[in-house]
Length: 99
Image 1 (spheres, rainbow, N blue to C red):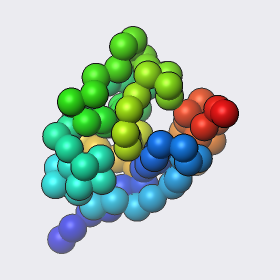
Image 2: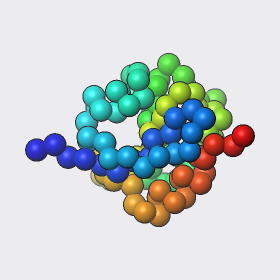
Image 3: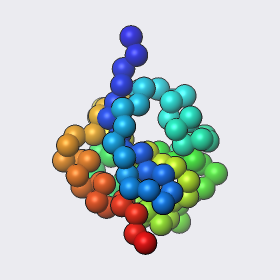
């Protein structure tokens, strides 16, 4: 049975978008269009999944430090889990598009 998780997907020039993604490596790679790497976000327990070809210049990265599409997920005991409503609220604001 395929499990799904709630994540924030952030595309260049767009506001963060809540999406349901399959909970597997291939889905993450297809979403970011590359090979994944992770780094801690500003929120404890949440990770940013990004294309390893474009590493951020600082950690935890700000939106402008990340190139391409990236995903924000929650990890609990080593397992990917859905973001909570509070996670979404805080992270969507922190990683919004600033023009």
